[in-house]
Image (cartoon, rainbow, N blue to C red; front, side, top):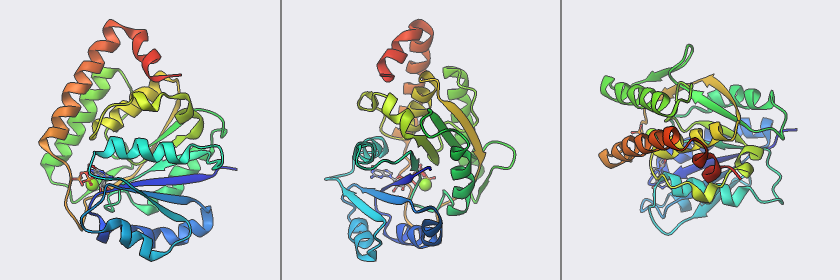
Length: 253
Ligand SMILES: Nc1nc2c(ncn2[C@@H]2O[C@H](COP(=O)(O)OP(=O)(O)OP(=O)(O)O)[C@@H](O)[C@H]2O)c(=O)[nH]1
Ligand SMILES: [Mg+2]
């Protein structure tokens, strides 16, 4: 039977994370998952706020300072992919309410259609029939759609939402990757993981999701993050054309 663990990176999300965990409670009783918050020493005391809720299925990884989404996820993967845990799948989602708890059952169901020991990535996808975004300005929608389109063409990965972070990876897939070789920090980490999954020959399942603009807290999106994604994707695309096997050796064990 599938055993899920959910990773939620946080930086100054003390309001949003409480709302998220409260919404998760009924679902947790059904699916019996654990959830790990990966906090980068948020000044608003996100970590303490989570501890004070005293949910036995929630734990916090405390990191010394803000080091980006990619680094936070890498620390989360290292923590949960140890033999004593036996998680079959690792879910990644934002704390800010943009990734809806309501979409989780369909994502769990999609992951469970594939045998637990196979490599699979389930992508919560905004840009496909049935998917949508709520309260995002046109400029932000355009940026996201253009980013995914650019990555799809440059890297030759035929998926519709390469920058989204609402995903499920099978542990089999994560264990087959050299996670320490991942270098991206911002959004780009999502593209790098999708590329590594593609190189590992993982099965891919796209599940339509509704992405909702955050209500509380402040976005950590910045021009630097967008530029990192742009130049990294361009470099990866060139590398894939010039040295098709080198990337596979770099990312896949
Ligand atoms: N631990 C950690 N979490 C981070 C860091 N940067 C962002 N996050 C978290 O990653 C998730 C996504 O970040 P957001 O600021 O919402 O960025 P976004 O969703 O890409 O952009 P918006 O749509 O503008 O909200 C949130 O849960 C953040 O708190 C970081 O440096 N460290
Ligand atoms: Mg967000």
